[in-house]
Picture 1: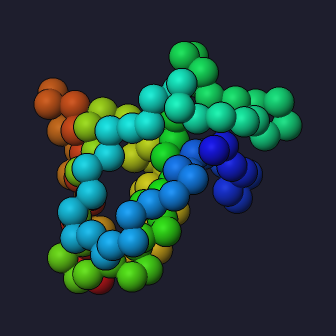
Picture 2 (picture 1 turned 45 degrees about the horizontal axis):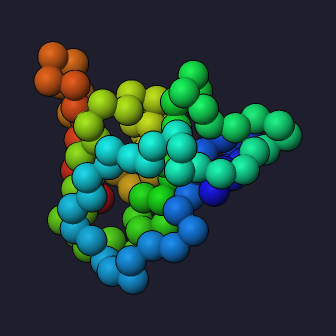
Picture 3 (picture 1 turned 135 degrees about the vertical axis):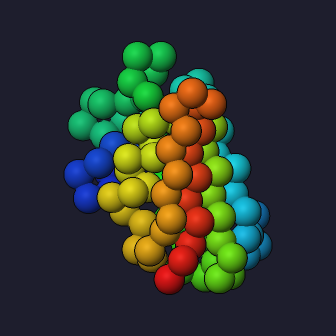
Length: 104
């Protein structure tokens, strides 16, 4: 579903696994799987999706919490601006990935 989080267009899955992950691999969702709109704005093939589900896991994540993002540069900017903890952020342009390692 599409959502407005602090005036930022993002998506949330309807349901998530009831787990406390220490590793999250972010490479979704696809534009076809995000339904709805916010003030007539929706995700489509021209608007990159920003997934915000990781925000729900962060507060109860273990101390070795690690996020690996395959591409999805806008999503990484969203995470850098919205994650509450301190993270070691690595951006590898040539390999097209970024990672966030919880440090505090």
